[in-house]
Length: 141
Image (cartoon, rainbow, N blue to C red; front, side):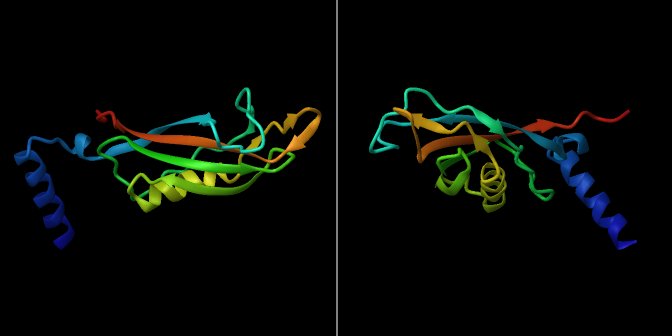
């Protein structure tokens, strides 16, 4: 019975605040990614274009994470000569460790086209912006 009382109290509080239960429960956020390079990321050469992503996995949003606003993580990924991610660093945190970890774990598994400069495969550094945008769960009828 105590669980029912807590649920009713929560429902009443949400109603008083003008929120409906459907508004209070967000669905999995939409995730978008952008790969780019900034001047100076690769000190010995300048990339003319961003390497193509050959394999990627979408970040798995932690189940207990309830996003109210968009969250963005900026990662720096070090690529080896084969295009495998050999190291990932968080350059700018979202402010939520779980979101940062989800983005980090996903990008760490990505694979890129190898970077070839003047016929030689090179290590390279790219930046990956991962944005988590909350989506409203449709009210079930």
